[in-house]
Length: 205
Image (tube, rainbow, N blue to C red; front, side, top):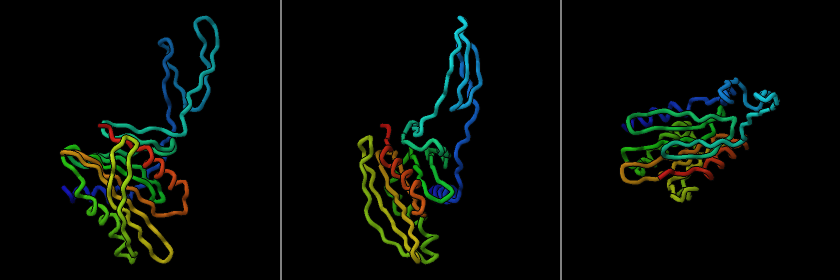
């Protein structure tokens, strides 16, 4: 199972997640179906002859929520979901810069013992290339009150720096692994994406 998890992790780290395109939506008013686009106005004439101007606006910050977790993210980003194997699912946002985050959700085991293993898998390619690595403990209280604990690793090589964080929260036969990756500090907006995620992450008990 561990091999399957790590293989899936490596695959998704190398993937590029593109921003969600605005699609068409259907709004129903008094049984009338009208196809509309987000952030565009449209007119609707009522049965009494009154003409209304209606807008559908998407907020700048969206909320992702499922049975286990919730967090906020910028509307320009989409959450990628996948099933790794029975009882293990993953959601993530990783930009083309390599910066981003992911959450692995376990429904049949406590993943707390996987922290170091995950961190080693994330950093092994850079270590083999010649990066030096330093580690420190990581601990954060979530918006929902639980505490995630783990390790933050900083890798350095010829003026370049990568920062990986792996933290877990576990209960009986369930839990989550939280992973953040900052591979390029030149993109300040990517740091804000990770910050917003950590500040709003909640576990739905």
